Length: 419
Image 1: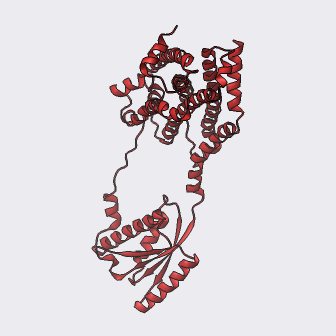
Image 2: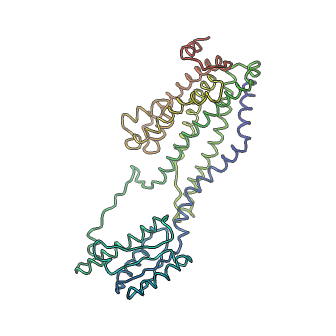
Image 3: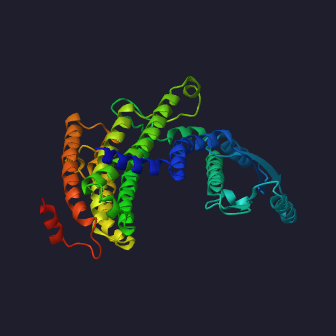
């Protein structure tokens, strides 16, 4: 037992003392919080004042006034617009004003100018907008939307139709989607979905770490020295537990950060503000940790088998491919779970131990499955985990000292039969 503790301690401290581990563990919660709050703050607090000139050749200020009203009233726009009307009388006046507006555009005094000709009202109308670049599609769409609304209102008014009445009659309906608890905020779902992707990435990343550790020890011949004083099973188990504790340390820091984020969303300051911080339930955080621990040990045992089978870094790419594909399959099946989380196919797939960490957790982020299904998935995962550890111990003991070409399937079957 003392030797096992020494191996666990070495594997754990080697990982947690690495600068990359400390930085990634500390900065990830701040990065997640920043990704949530920064876009909201940018959208609400940093709206820029943009000046657009309208070179109007229609001798009618009605269109300009309606465009200005539509742009100013658009609360969904990222920018705040200020419009300036330049009334032109003839072609010479138009060219002179265009040259002056071009100079202002080059100097940055305006962000662009639109040329409205006398036939812009006649279908199909055309309005030309001059700007420095074509990268800001949102601004062009804002301007196009405002001009379309203004031109349609002008045409209706000319035909004697009340534009306001037409607008009221042609307004559509908005479908509001709620869950069974009457909740409608989708930000909570997207935060849970981010947890799902994080769960997949961490199981894969730490599984690879186990395999690389085994291969590095084989290449440096350190494993031969270690096996002179400890049993192969102790070495493998110590590596799994040590790296697992390091990953669990990281997960616990992130889980506590998510819990703090949920509590922060209920704070009076943010509760009364326009910035809504997504909440995530404590139950979901607990199951995130549970499925990560079980998924890690299950796949890490398989990655340890892959590491014991190969001798070089080049061979690891082929050895890890089936395991990586196995982890990717539930991600490819996510649309099925998102569309119908309680269908027979989704339920069966979420009970498959190799898919449960991703599929069952995905179902939980969308709609709470029956508790007996969650319990059954955990029991099946634990049973499969014991089987994987047993097989890993058999193969690891025989393969960790093997060098050269990887074993064939008949050879692996013989290793499993060794007492």
